[in-house]
Image (cartoon, rainbow, N blue to C red; front, side, top):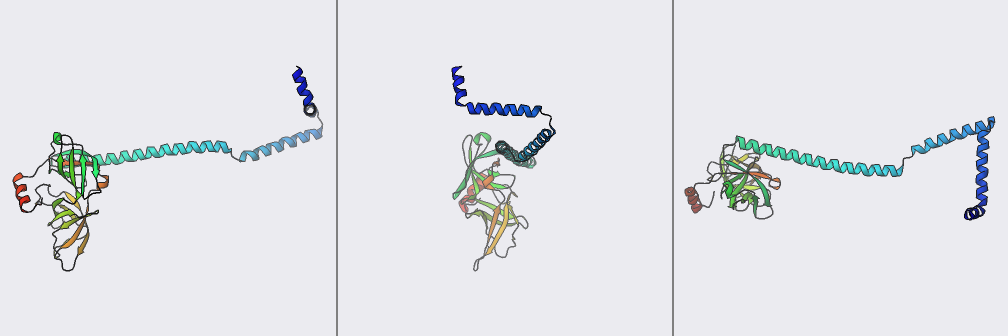
Length: 277
């Protein structure tokens, strides 16, 4: 009690002012004078207008919280869209592979690409199948887009594939439009070269190049790519014919291995004579 009395003594001016204000407010509210009624009405109206004006300005803290929630929602939706897009592309690839396997007369075994070497002269891919799946060296590797390469090494459950973009790769090929024969090989870069094409032979940009009937390893008429550039050098009897591969190796994920092996006698004879395939 003594403490309360001390506090009142210290702040007596404020206590008296507060009491006087309360008494004034009570007296004003009990007074029925017209002038006071008018003052109260104007005051209420002014406060209403002032409150409406203030309500126009947004609550900064509330907007900040809503902005954070919207950003989180946007990230979640973006992630979901990305996953749905990836699932759609995966579904399209699998449908293409399934359709190819059903339509092909070749004995095929599906494989996933689990490793790539794309920045060397001898580029390869690693597959998740091997001898246990019937895979052997020199078996062709294809995809729904076209020729990928061939198997060069196998273990029980894995295989290494030599792809078109490998300086040691060769395949007998032909221009589908008129059956002009050549040999495809890689010179570096993104294109492969169709060799042994004489200047007088009719090849054009846009022509489709496929595996030929003369290959001992690759089945015939497997798409290799499209002629994208033809160069004629003065003094040369041959054209430089560059081909854009049908397979996009940077995004290659699934392939098929064709379970056929070349005839040993023919292979030995051809390798002895020229080293081609």
